[in-house]
Length: 245
Picture 1 (cartoon, rainbow, N blue to C red):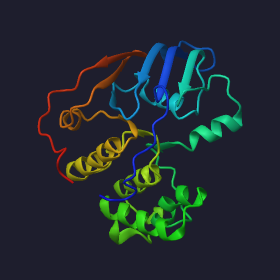
Picture 2 (picture 1 turned 45 degrees about the vertical axis):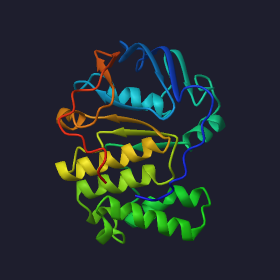
Picture 3 (picture 1 turned 90 degrees about the horizontal axis):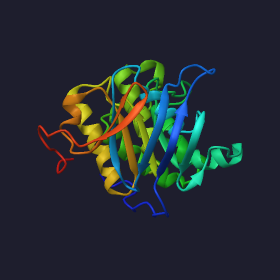
Picture 4 (picture 1 turned 90 degrees about the vertical axis):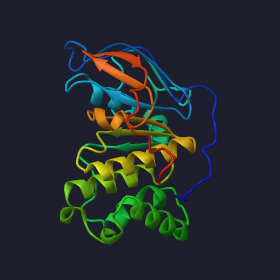
């Protein structure tokens, strides 16, 4: 895959740094407790844990939808714990987020949904056309570029959402169950896309329940259990496809 092969420029410090972070809702028992986390630049981690362990809550902190109840959070070296809305908006432009519920715009075609981040960034239209077309072909949607989300299957919507999240080569990619609605072949191909972006300098966090998929890729795991985070080594690879794609 050739789109935007220029590497992300490095910056000082870790991509993400959480120091003794708690997160609770409405003063209830914390869903995340004393989380310490440092994600180096250009790193790749799986985020694992049972349903209800706090994976989506941790991701919501990382994509700045929530702020810590206690502790501190830094993103790209910036302390965001008490940051202004303008500061948060600027940081969000450096993120690519894949949501479980897709969050596509139904009045736009698949092509225009994916193109949206590039157009907001005022990328020349010739580049938009080249990059979006190539990326939609990569995720297997060459025949659906003009289709609108209501006409697409769940798996097709998921692939549009992934393409939109990564098309502008964000510094940090956060994916919440990105392969949950696709078959194994497409799942491995999508993972290869995340790995390619990781190699080009993006930090990647993929939340998943799919242990067989995790075992294919030798990356460390951030494991949540009861709101507490542990760093675990990679699962023993079942079959490496890192050279494919």
